[in-house]
Length: 353
Image 1: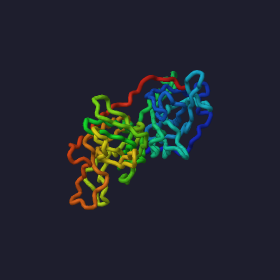
Image 2: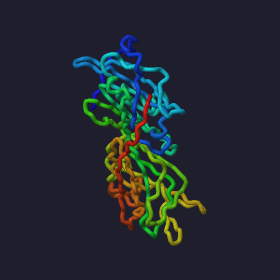
Image 3: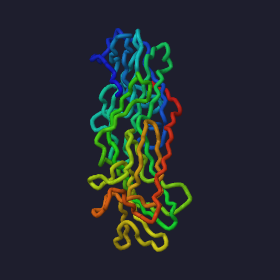
Image 4: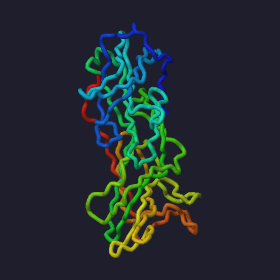
């Protein structure tokens, strides 16, 4: 496990140790994206803490803590309400993050380099945070007169769900999706000794935890075009989970999966194969598609589900003879999920003053 930074208890600096003529400023890189909950072109503020870089054998001490830098509308740059100046001697280590931690937030600050994140489980609301973090060490006024370089990293994983249908004889009407048997909370620790993006520890237990999204019913007919997006993009805790391979003692899937609430109909006469019909109204029922979740920081995972095989039943029948997953459409070949992995890309720099 990554080590926490040892910081002395003092969190104030005497005026005589500061250089009142030169204010600390920042140059940042951060990935600019489109979703409102993501932090990019919509980054309005971030929080910075500075530590006096320890001499050999010494202990680091706080120089300033949790300073909030906000966007200035006129210039598009950022400024803090209180001015912070470079020390006359020594160098500074900077730790920055967004969004802010605090009561009611999805982010809890445990220490200067350790945070607990709990993405909003009401996934349909599109309100999950994108926790970004930056570190730069041993900076002095002489080498950072134009601004301290801060490169923010996307610490979490972005998940995109899409569906297609390769079976021309079937039609699917989808109304909800979920990622099941995943951790909904985790701890992020940045360890400067490891020179990496940071370490995640996902919460346990995770079985029975899920992210559910409900939306307007979407008809997915057989087509050669691009797969249709289901629900919102999710920003979740990096983790590694093995897919369901059988039912457990509770007659539920024993591993991770993507659930799809869908009705399945014959394309020729609109007769119902899976789901419920009440007059003209059709309601879907859950089917599952087992999937390994191997999520890393700063990656986008796009899962493309071919519904043609029908998937498996979410719960074992009472009279089942074994614990094998039961197919929804026994006469159709189960087609497994494809996953595409891409990086979140850092783009332009902006001056922070």
